[in-house]
Length: 496
Image 1 (tube, rainbow, N blue to C red):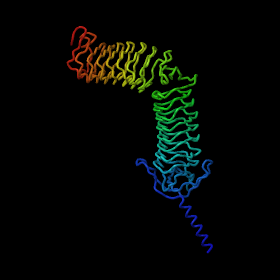
Image 2 (image 1 turned 90 degrees about the vertical axis):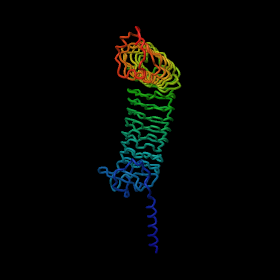
Image 3 (image 1 turned 30 degrees about the vertical axis):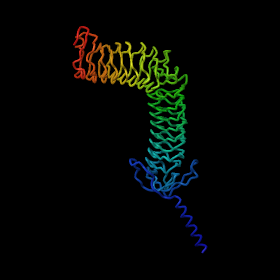
């Protein structure tokens, strides 16, 4: 009888232990994300000792598949553990990776323990795991795929120093992420890496990083300060776009390339520093200046362009969409204004150009608040849509332009009076959409292309500063006079 009772007791204990692993439905997944073909579920699992993860029993029911002579975890299977512990071995074979989308969209997991031996977490592996707060990283992890933790609930991340490669958007939209430390051998922060990590406050970027990808910190609105290691050579487009809380930046000494819109739209920025002996960039006043071209590529504080000769070009998008900017002084010595420099600056209603100016690039003042403008004679090139979609009422191009004027005043719906004098200039869509234009003077025109005056129905006459013969010699494309047919041209020796 005692033997029978003892046997029953043992049986009950074993039954309870087996039930503790449980079984349940698979966590929700995106319909678009499919797991690799399955060859089995983890049952007979063992754990190889790991200094960081020795106290947890491995989860059962996980789905796995062959990976060469080893195994990869491909799904949650029947496991319902909130704390998922990846086994080191299954049936004597090592687990070396977590497959693409293996746990994607699982809303049950709040912690994942990954053992030593796992070198790859593939793309989308934990995408959308909103409850996932903690990852116990394997000590020899080498690669993290793109979007691997996109939209997860991670709070603090300190990567092991074995990680070499991390894909783009790996930690994007982790809205609870507060702190992050990179690996010591990682060379690149990929594109959209921290995109919309709106709680991110602390980032430790280790020496050895060489590049920060496009939109890497886009919309990290809680980030106040950042110190970039001197090893960084390239910061790609829009890397810190919409970081509206960023006040202080320490730039890397060895920075070679700073692409567009990196720091150019940050009204919050109060301070930027770089080593005095940095070879490629320098600080002049409240501007970051590229030494080789003397181009101002970032501005902060009082947003003043230095007048000491240290700057000769206003960089692309430098003041773009700064709607609170009501005035700006462009000092003598400035020779070029680059693409979109004042685009969308609706507070700027008037501007005076220096005599030194030679080039106005694409869309420089497009969508700004300019009401009057005079382009000095020294300007030889005005690129597409330079003054487009502004509330200009009066404009003049004084006579030095030698290139094509493409859509220069497009959709300036309040423009009534304009004088354009060039030196062999081609007009192409120059006044399209100028519906109130009534007073136009032209000179030095070599060609007029189709739809140059599209929508200019109120323009019934124009003045040409030249003879009738010179007007007739202008090359005119078919449709050049669309919407102004029958217009009277007043020339120096008569009307046409």
